[in-house]
Length: 65
Image: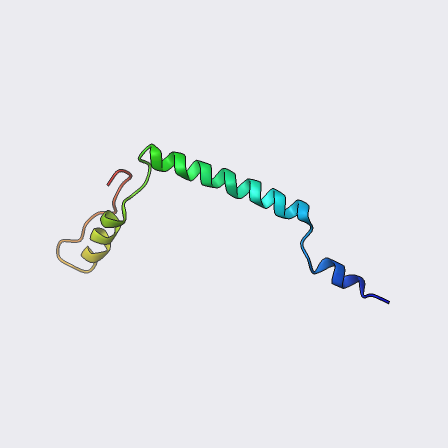
């Protein structure tokens, strides 16, 4: 006789589909934020991080930096 627990080892397709829809929505929102300039550039973050512990420590960067 098969062990019924083995049937639960795989995620039902409905959960995978729901997760995919949710991830797609998050991706669309993120892309809209980027298009609108609502992000901090890698360069601005790195400039800020490199300033830590120095006499000229910078404030955290803001959107558009």
